[in-house]
Each structure stands twice: as structure tokens, then as C-alpha cells.
Amino acid sequence: MSNSPKALYNVQIIWSNFISSVPRWNYSHASTPTWRLYWNPGPGAWIRCKNQTVLLDKSIAVLVPPQLAFATGAEQSFPHFYVHFNLSAVVSPEQRQVWQFDSRKIILPEWEKLLPEFSSQQLHWAGSAAVNAALLLLPENILLPKSNDNVLTLFEKTCNYLELNNIYNISCPELAQKCFTSVNTLQREFFRATGLPLQKWLLNRRMAKAVQLLLHEQYSIKETAAILDFADRYHFSKVFKNYFGSSPAQFVRQGGLPMP
Image 1 (tube, rainbow, N blue to C red):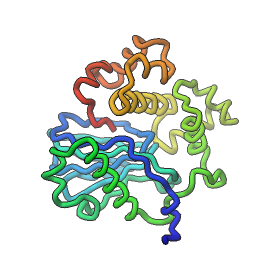
Image 2 (cartoon, one colour; image 1 turned 90 degrees about the horizontal axis):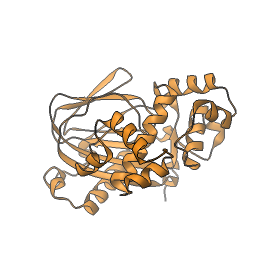
Image 3 (spheres, one colour; image 1 turned 30 degrees about the vertical axis):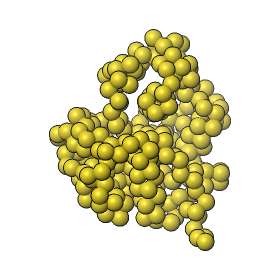
Image 4 (cartoon, helix red, strand yellow; image 1 turned 120 degrees about the vertical axis):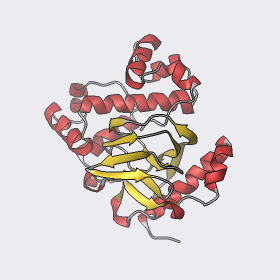
């Protein structure tokens, strides 16, 4: 039986999917509330973080921790296998980065041909297998228990507060008050950790949750608007379209896009 702290951490797969041809993937300020694993069986896309650019192709799989600021781009359409998941552990801001691995250690050789034919359940199993293989390759000392408040930064404590209380609509002054700090201090901490203004980070988080509810948990537009504390479905649809470029209904009909 392993004595590694990793053995104590639980993995929850939220969504695992394969898209044979992603038409666009150009985002200059991405940041996600969940962990992500990306593997592209073909070339055409890249991911950039902290002045390092990783060209994505079949030889590389990447792992992206939550709340990390990064950019993505694509010169052409490309095939894309991606997994969204939660992990009951945190990564300190100093060690938060995009990790890249030899895909042969994470992706089974036959998946390149089988992924387009996999059912939803098979994609879920494939995502779980890939995520656990990637986590095994991470350095032991980068993961810390969420429950250890002594090692958490203000940024991480604030993220935990929002997640535990399911808060998706809150102003910067109100959030600072809830976290017993000043607005300036909170904004400075979030920009240092993510590279994003706090208000932009909050909107990213809200829209990422909207995609999860609409696409993966199959809530209606009205139900999603209520959960995310919008005034009504029309206000939610307007914000969603401004953010993604398509209405919630169009987004769902098209099966969504692998938005970072």
C-alpha cells in the first residue's frame, strides 16, 4: 500500500470527450476552475503559459491545473481529446504550470483509431485512465491537501470559499469582505496567481460553470440562469453570447466547443 500523499487524493472526472476537428481554439486569457488534460492526435494547435509555448501533437499530452492563466491558439483545425476533472488537492502558485508528458506513458496506442468510435461511457473511462496515468508522473511535492489551511494562499482560500458555498455572482467588494481582506489586496493576489483581473476571473468561472450545467449536466437555459444567479434567462443568454459568440441554445445544439 502506497504511503504517497497522492494515494489520499480523489479524482472526479467531470467531462471527457473527443472532437475529430476543432475549428478554432484562439484564447488569449484562459483560466479554468477545474483541472484539464489535453491530447491532440494531430498537429495544428499550441498552448502558451509563462512565456513557454508547447506545440500540441500526438507525441505530447499536457496537464493544466486550475486557476492558471494561459493562452491557446490553432493554425488549422485539429483533433482534440480533452478531460475536465477535479482533484482534492491544491498546487501552490509558485509551482502552478502546464506540465507536458510523453503521450506514450498516458495514452494507449490504439486510442488514436478508437477514440472517434468510443461511446460516452468509454470516453469517460479513457479520460479516467489518462488522468490517473498523468498524475502518477507528477512530482510528489507539488500536491497539497485542500484541508491544510496553513499552506493555502489567500487566492486558494478564496477559491475554496467560492466552491464550497457555490457562489457564482458576487462583487469584488463583497468577496473581499467575506475573505476579511481589502479589495486591493484581493485583486493583487488574483492577478499575481492567474494573470487576470479579479472581475474577469469571476466571469470566466461563471461561464465555465454554465458550460458544465448546459452541456454536461443537461440543465435547461432557465435552470442554468437561476443556478448562476442571473436576473433571468434573457440576461444570462446575453452575457453568454457576448462571452462565447453564440447563444446558449446554439452552443448546446453544436455540442459545444472545447473552450479552455
